[in-house]
Length: 498
Image 1 (cartoon, rainbow, N blue to C red):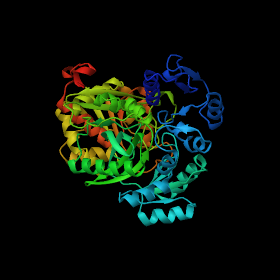
Image 2: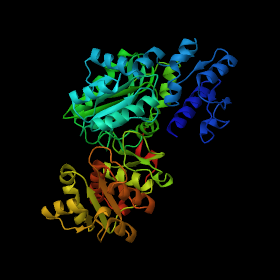
Image 3: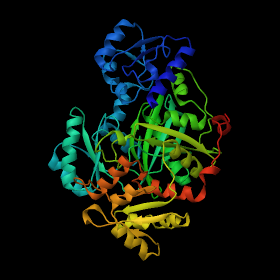
Image 4: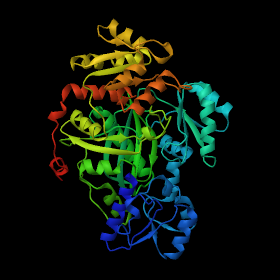
């Protein structure tokens, strides 16, 4: 959906300049395969062989690979070696960004920090490295789609399992393991470079801490909870990277931020899934600007993207109910099937609008809390008090119930399935509950645990479920500050006045 919008917008921009525009795509569910979207449509797979055949037919064509996601981006080197004309950032620099070893060396040269990492050459070497830097670690292949085969390993057993999976997915490209920084915020920079200079950018923050795929994350623009110094450091690092790679077109950089220290996760030299979102929130069409830059048009800076008088929130849409047995717990591999973006005068208003738009039902009676680990229980303590103040009854599993009571929060204990006592979790779900907040400790749950059964039943019964601590905190804070009936209904142009 997001890349479809990018392709159609780029095609429209090119056609407005009087250029014949050709789209190659084989997905019948996209707008870009509509015959009105371009002058010509080739309903073919995006492989080098098919692109090569079409290029031979369409003489003197310029290739645009930057707006269709990772698949066309992966064709850059092959097309370059074949002598095809490619618009935008050079394929050599695209490869420098995609290849983990090359990109890491570039960051070292620029003095930009990154999580500790090492190329995967064997399981034993990987286990030794993980023990050296400490668990958890992230298993990350290069040139992957939607985080395929990416996993966080919390032990040597998990790491061995994930390495086998990653090797199967990406045998031709290096697989790296890197230190996974727990408790770090994730920040994205979407922008357009012009001959190595920063033309326009948007800095967004994820509601969820690092560990949730950017396609599944709730994204906020402009950022509401970042230090000004962090924003400054992110922009400074972005400028260095753009200059070093002579970026000429769209880009997306993902950062980690913790204790006012930033680290780069990755760089994509293409439009990202959040390009439509940042375009709508800022009022500047990033794809149109990138297309003009790639065609050689000289544009001037002066875009206002940080100091906005409103907030945009992008919330993911999931389809777990259609996938029998799938665990709805969010991880580093993407699970969402859609998204919604909404605006508000503040973060809480925009967030409530966004989750309502994806079908989330606001709790009115009771909430079940099942929190793994003492830290999660402590972090959600204030939120639990807010739930009581909202007039919601709290139900909780064993240790969560004891913890809440020890801090003066009344609740009703509910028994897990394995305890085989009533009132049980399943009984409560079947009788009706407004919301379940199930926060697991790090690591992969093995088999059908109580947590998995709880989450899966929520999906099957249509009960709102939250599995992320930061999302739970924002939801409860938003409910405490706003009533649904007080949410304002405004048109897009009432917010964006460009």
